[in-house]
Image (tube, rainbow, N blue to C red; front, side, top):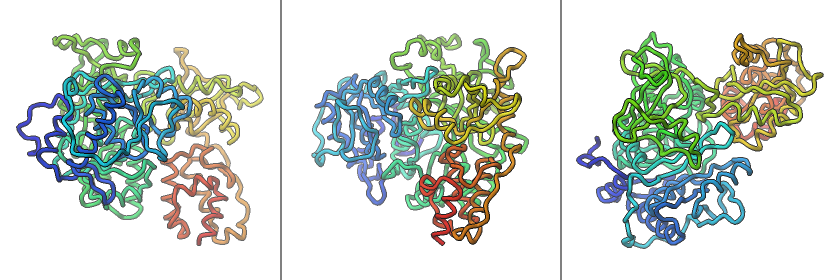
Length: 615
């Protein structure tokens, strides 16, 4: 335990830790945004003033405060203020389809929503009660009633996660669980008042809880960006360096791209950075070892679920040479993790379903007793009254050294860029389209972190030969995925789409997803490369040939043509980062190329002409 928290009893509420640091280190930085630093004293005064305004609007104990904000520092301030008022908070993620956004606002039932006038945060439906987050300069905080505010059993926040019906499930986390998680991760990572955690995650993703509360529980600082736009690896590196950040958390796919960029530019991690947390997907052992050999910043492989207050286990250290998986590690102090089969706790070496118990568990799901009972079960192995365990649906086994290894799912859930998704939700939306008769969704066999859809066309004339697949054209894909894009977040929309004559079955009569994945993985290999016309006057240095080659390599699509759209053929934001990074290496004219240029010029020809005009 660090000195700033030494001697304190276990916290029943995160605000106990916060108040301790406000008293002990009032002038220390708490929330950093560029050159502007809010000290613990300043942040506390602002949070108290906002809490008073929330209370005046009716947001007290038992209420929910909604956050529709696009500026991370505002969002953290709103979280603190809601907790100080005795309320819970929920976050409305930007970029959600309008129907889903309105549904979440209605279901959250917030007394008031915090927003910033003129900001670019998630728009709120008409008639939603709202309060401007920026108020008058705070006066010295007046004494306010605290009775009932700091109760470990009160709700701290609601975050929405994927659901089997396609409707996100609202996960209810209590204040005691939040405090216990913040303390457990603070202790495990040995966070101190000198630590600075760089905030990267989407504000609607539960990783933001991990980026904020443990480091503040240690008396350290949250480094807030002035916006929530994705950072390219170069921008991330510069921001980490300039802010002297000591800790950052990245999705597995984003971390891969950052590592590629470091290798391509012969750089290493900034000197102040001591830990890079990585989670969301299985890690490649070779990539893990390569990082350890070249980077001073330690890797920390984390595993957890929204229902268990973010992270339950973590792994760091030297990976054994014979390891064929990167473990997800050992449990934090607030989580009891077991591997079970048919209700029986298994010894090390046996594979079963991962269960998480202990004080980290959520109360359950918002207005969904059926799903709560299905996942949060009475624990026959714990004699404590009311003891429960959460059945994760993840498969794993313990190694002899006590580390846990993740081995995939035992149900239809998929893991997409750190989000859990029920495949049937996407399949039903695809089958709602007029052009599609049947649909199966699987993790992309090329990158393992986006979705591929195999579709049986409603029109028999579009069906390819049996045992083969054929990519949809750009317009066909847009029509096919339209119902998904209207109902689900962007990351749930399949990036690659293929026509199939029929869905293959295994001997048990179930759809053979392995056979479909094998067909999709080889689809590009069988296609002949599209012809490239002779270089034009705008392509005298062969830019089109180079750009087209990189498009084909990154998308694993040898038949891609010069006028094919990057995003209509499987491209997404992380692959766009990789494409731009590689083009910067290939072409001097691409030295200043940004990912934003690809959104405006998504075909090889358009991008090559853009580069030729900037030589």
